[in-house]
Length: 466
Picture (cartoon, rainbow, N blue to C red):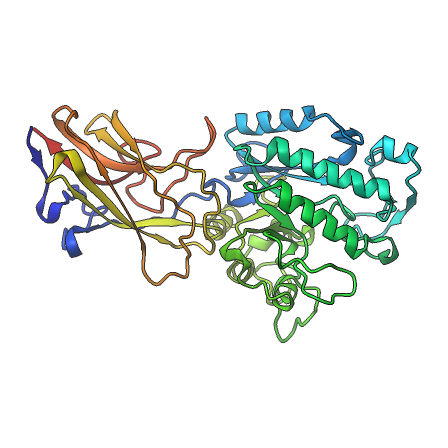
């Protein structure tokens, strides 16, 4: 069996637009960049579940649930509706993001009945903090109630036991406390959960969830008047007024802006380990991507993404109706920058020893945040040329976590594969990162060679076996 490989141990494909000439350092051939798709998994814009088809590319869907939907007794739970959601969303190839709440303007019967029957006090009033929508009635529980506090701990423990690490579940926003589960009762501050209750909820999540990322609404440091400190917990954060009250400038020095809170809490680098998410503020839905944009001064989507290092954002504007071509194209361009974007800058294939053929890549993150999940498998494959048949593939131990966009040098990954039993032929050597559940969206690389020989594989070189 004879292996034919071009000089410098890499055979460049004869397509000049994809494969620059092989003037490669140490045998590495450069690979051309092309923006990765806006619907790469675990990042981008997130509609509410069951969005209209074809409005905007996305890889996740969001759903709120009342606590009463899951909890029917102190230690009695029913997960049918959550399981149905996860099956439905994953059936569309998407991941789910969920939040559980205890109060929501205009919604009734969201507090578990057994707690009310047990004497839980509930404040019913007209909530005026619903802009740009009309005020609505709301029911706020007494968060200091001992039975409620115990129930919250029990629920989080059961939730984590059943769903932590579930491949269909992308993220969980902590919820449970405050209006919409957003950890505030503005403007009725006297109804807000005290610091002890907040701490109990955070501790419960930290214990129950070790794999699925948890995101809190507010990053808080020491000595805040209303909030317990959050820095010691392994959580990300979600800015639910994104591109509206996110950035702090000379003109916008408000202490409640998201970046002001991150700065005070000394959490501006939290994105390096834990994800930043949120929601585009309703007032700027859709028009946030127009030129000129409708966002307040100094709150452009691009700058807010750069400063927060946002990975995902809930949005309705791009999904409620078909966008104009200009709005759509600008949104795609902006969303592609969110989260991670992996470009395989160069690759090396050395088949000098066929039983230990070397495959090595240099990979750079051109996005604004890392990839946070370590349960995604990276594979090397041989694809028949022409024809696109996958002849053989190997699993690697490579991880995509920890590759930061701020790194000066690209990350290096290498593995050896055994070609002794591969039949003669001409093959593309390619990389794939399939979804962590069957039928899900695979991770795509920011390479012109992504998918040229077989979807969703990214070709990094080729070789001929005679």
